[in-house]
Amino acid sequence: MSSFFYRWLPIFFGCHCRAERSFFLNGRQFPICARCTGELVGILILGITYGIYHPQILYAVLIMIPMIIDGGIQLLTTYESTNIRRFLTGLFFGYGLFYLFVTSMIATYWYGYHFAKML
Image (cartoon, rainbow, N blue to C red; front, side, top):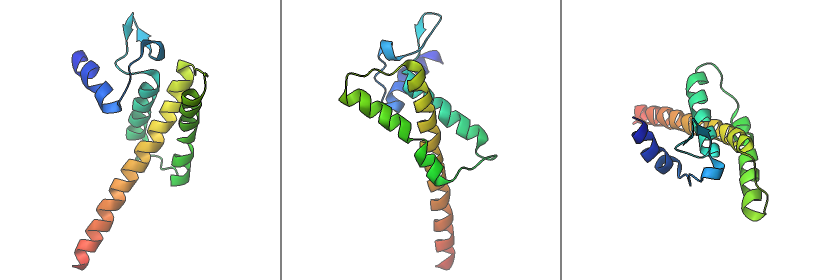
């Protein structure tokens, strides 16, 4: 099972897997970097809490902005973010992005369902 995650998680997330940007547990590097780990945790948290709490779509978009800013600053300057900051911005981004994805899938289903009933 472990080899499955180490092989497919980097592909799924498009992760660079750089050691200096990854967490380690018992001397073993996580299969994905700190930011992608945060995104995965955000997705899992949304999966658990979706039936309990639905933020407004605007909030889902707003919580994605810190990762875009942090990643953009790192890309354009010599600034290096910490792994904790990468994890937290990834967590918010993963939660927001997956919320938008799930909401759009549900809306697409319902609009399609009601449209088909009119035919």
